[in-house]
Length: 165
Image (tube, rainbow, N blue to C red):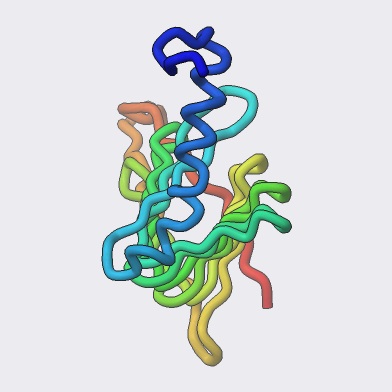
């Protein structure tokens, strides 16, 4: 058997992935009291989307990651941060379902609070649902205009929000 340092680069990558995959998949089960992190990447531009939580499970058949407990999501490419009690990342559908005291913040101060929020990654759209007999809260930072009716600075990107009843 050839020592691993003499393997061609492509075989080294496969070897490294073969060693990392079982550890990544079993991490949530082996260390349930430690913070778990999963990073998903888009196929087009490889921009990281990171989810941290107390526990994470991966369903390889359906390609779904379920994060539970103190969930934190960071998506720097879209300047989005989110917190919730639970999140599920559906990699085939490219969507994230947040539930339980969801708070989403976009750089520039725009935010959403709801009980459940679905983030459609490719559309850059949020669908927020409130608790029963409650409402969804969204805060948007609006640029003030000067006397000529022009804004003094370009407005930050605003997430599209659709409220379903």
